[in-house]
Length: 106
Length: 122
Image (cartoon, rainbow over all chains, first blue to last red; front, top):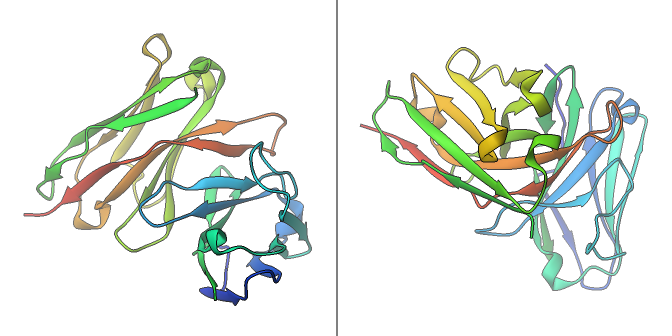
């Protein structure tokens, strides 16, 4: 079965750039989405179709996808961005989520 | 306002059955595909099932195949998940999630409900 691999944790200082990776076989041939989940809340879509931001998502969130890796980049990271982040893609009539990355802003 | 409200979660014994519901409002429900996604306590997101608009396609995760059934009633703007032969590992918050299908293979999930909790324990 298809798998998406994320680092369990990423740390970043306020104002700096955070990059969260998501790896999967030929992931660049699929479309990737990214979700943000804060404690006790439902996930929120922050990037879809690799690079697009839904309405209301700040411009500091961006995405890319090439080869075997999709990347979520948060520029000028703020304390409010501290959360769990999940990548997701479709593979052969199955939805696959990455294991999630805890972003710590310290 | 686009809204998804799940209900039906409960404490249930292993081997039991439960039916989850999701009431949709604020959009044309019949035009969208829908998913169930679950999250076990302290764990990540796990996709459970998908149903296309007009119920033409249904897909399931291997972990629930043969035990869970997804369905929808477009007249009632509602999504359902019938869960049978429940196991302890099915314990999770179950989210109802809207899916946008603009072009083939470019689907994405854009709206999530608040979830309903299923606890399978004796």
